[in-house]
Length: 476
Ligand code: FES
Ligand SMILES: [Fe+2]
Image (cartoon, rainbow, N blue to C red; front, side):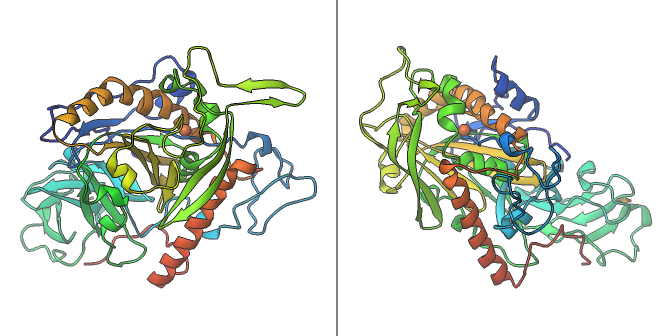
């Protein structure tokens, strides 16, 4: 994929006037591996109009099942549609139980996706790939536009070009010039004013909105009108004041692995036990968790939290250490290391039944007592996604200074850096199906069930039976 340059952009009206340096992941093997795939990284802090940043969750590896295929070859996946389970082969050989999900390697169409920071989109067009669609983003007169990034003349990316006239973008090769709002060919510089193709051909345009300091693009199923972006955002981010910090970066691995990692029940307490973000806070050993639907979200609800255990035949295991805080006595569902004394009123008002929740088309929400962390898993292609992590603090006025200090001093390095880097590492190396799921993976299957049902309804409403392939340039 074409890797866009990473963007960094604090918002206007914040104490920060310039781009923040990229985050680092020092000295930790998982983190550095993740970082290697994400050289272009985007961080910023600011007000809702502006910034973003990142954080994590995990996935479980599938290495133990990878050797079991019908062909008996370690690296050959079964391609048949049926549930290919042969005697002696443990687990699930494919995702035929979720056909829409299985087909969504390059993403679910019919949704808004955050692409980059608003401040990175200027009069110089930039290239992006979303849901397999090559797109160029450009700003003109304060408005951001998205066009298919391919000149219909000879296929040169329009993002290689520039603006020769207001309200247009010109291809660098022969000067075909396209109207930004409509995508229509409005002039051909090298064919003179009388070019007969003018107005007759064009490139596809995409709906664009700006929220949370980011540019969002709607990827259509067909040519339908998009739904309102606010109806797709987490409810508490519409109508409440807040400040935020965030990170956007291209990452290796399919978006579904990233999404499943985000909502994965089993990994955080083990994979992240070494994260500096958790240096003084113990992580549980194992939980009893159930999945609870509420509205358009599914929640992980913890019924039991166990801080240590004896494993027959192998021994005792715990993440408790003398230098860490003592584990809480009660079970809790806001935050992941204990019950909070005080919860931010906006967060408390949401009455979240659980700590982690997930909704279409791959939006993770992790509710802490004083802030909420969101992750948007943006599909690029079968092997890549864009990670968009945002930490939101529902405070205004002078109290926001505390958020900035905490975000810039710690969160973006420890949470959105090393901690999230552990997830990036796992997402990059996950290889499933085949897979042999275990009890905590109810989080994964619940998400797949949700997406299967929701996308089935969406396709039916659009009169389509399956996600179409990449759209092509359309005639004006
Ligand atoms: S390829 Fe774009 S103008 Fe010729
Ligand atoms: Fe994680």
